[in-house]
Length: 347
Ligand code: SAH
Ligand code: SF4
Image (cartoon, rainbow, N blue to C red):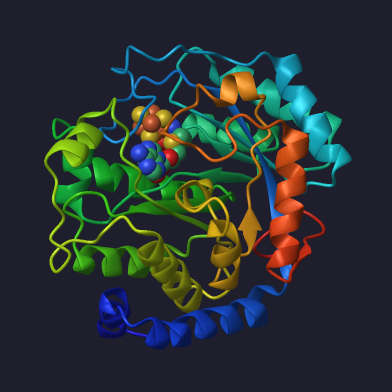
């Protein structure tokens, strides 16, 4: 499939024709990654962040937010739950929180590995090469860092234009991850204001070029306590001929196209998708190319405060409830829970 084909599908509106795309993605998924759905238990360890991404609810300038950090024993409780339920991976995510030193994160990785035979994915934002090396040695297996968009101008618009070459720096970190032996995860938001179809097609091609091992694709959800969210809610009237809407259907299209173009990669049915369609978002994600779910194991009292975007799906639910719901989703999609760590390539 070339760029022209990608653009054709991104602009296609006919539900009947789109069935062909869903079927193609589903059969590629079945052929390359099979029927297993891998569970990655997500723990959101801190909502402190020094960054100011204009779309994100936990950015440093959101002064209305109560901030938290989880203690090690609280984190290990979540790990215990994951182990008990056979999860192959723990994902440690946070804002860019300078409170945790490089060594503290390394110690946390070592402790988790002692408690459970799981793969560890880190998602702690941008960081230096030395930290990545130390965390790798401590036992981290994967790292998630979305490039958000491959369009430099758009990237700078949704971050702060002050730092030039910021997209380039982020892509360099993704390449560095691969060199250090991590599985590298990345991803994008669908329908950020002024995102063009052309740039979205380029995003998918960049996944391929960078040979990304895990690709997170979710709709942009406006947060009223952010500059971009306020602009979106007040003034933004999307011209759908020119710019990509932040819709559910557009998200499925990008998941499906990504599956076809990067056939053996891991693609989650994201929480953002479950947020815009609680009943069916994840099921349809799984039927249109996805093969991973990241159940949120963060205790509800913290999870509620990790408000990257509003209305986050299952924000009040305990891990046990979330887990049962995820099992139902997998069953309804006609699939089965994955065994082992669900690496892209078995090591
Ligand atoms: N601080 C880390 C991890 C937390 S943010 C980092 O930035 O990598 C994780 C992801 O949440 C971001 O990469 C972004 O794609 C997504 N996100 C942030 N705000 C969002 C919003 N308003 N709508 C949808 N996704 C959002
Ligand atoms: Fe911080 Fe990540 Fe949100 Fe940016 S997207 S403000 S780095 S948590």
